[in-house]
Length: 345
Image (cartoon, rainbow, N blue to C red):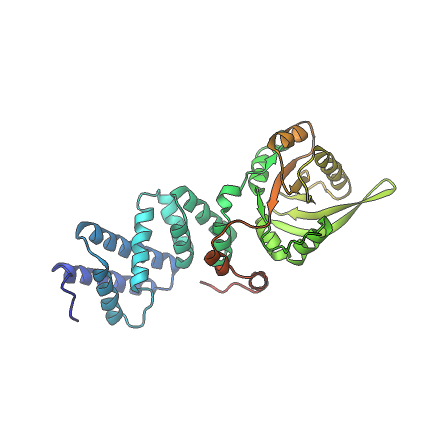
């Protein structure tokens, strides 16, 4: 194959070395085991990045590599010019990362990796999504939603009294379970919408709601009845959290947080602990989701309460670019994805 005039003379032996790496990976893993595939992409990315830096290789060289590899390995995919460029970017992004991060990248598919290192502005952010993807077994669609909604900036940010009302390490785990704000961009808000309407939409789209709440939440009921004395009180939403091993009560507010909301939740939690909690359950937790809040007011309202309560804001949308919003899967697609077994990637 005729090479472009801009290709340097050392290109040919370098290319043969690259081909030998691919053959070795074929023999060892048949390019089907993800860990070996990611390792191969790392090595090729290193080779390309070093050549681009030391020999000033440009786009023409990358085009030549892609063309030569296609001739040599006609039945293999993954060696297009764009994917080779991703490999080099992959190596550059993680080359100074610690060993743990470099091990984690091999545990998730290549498409997930591309999404993380192209959308993360730091190794710390990438580390968050790498670990969360492994722990939660996120599909690429779900990972895309978490990245674009900036989960790393929201996780653990709710105002709570957990440190005063829960033992360690339960308090830290509960704190990291809550977010602020919660993004309910899948709701259709109308001018006359009330809290009951919001509850209904959240439960109608329970899969998307559970995804936003995070891993571990199991839905128990909406307008859950609590019999206290001769009266029946209705709790907006009731969940059980598998990892925390406790009931989680959620009170939805279409208004700004008010101190009396905390007192009402404290009452609900007393009832849940009395009526539902067993010896094997940890103390129940309350989450007040409100349209807006003042941090100082929330801190004062929670200060002397004896039940663990967190307060977060909910928002309907974020100012995402149109091309990103259009790339998101629909609610229906997500619900189908969660209802069917996820094929290996």
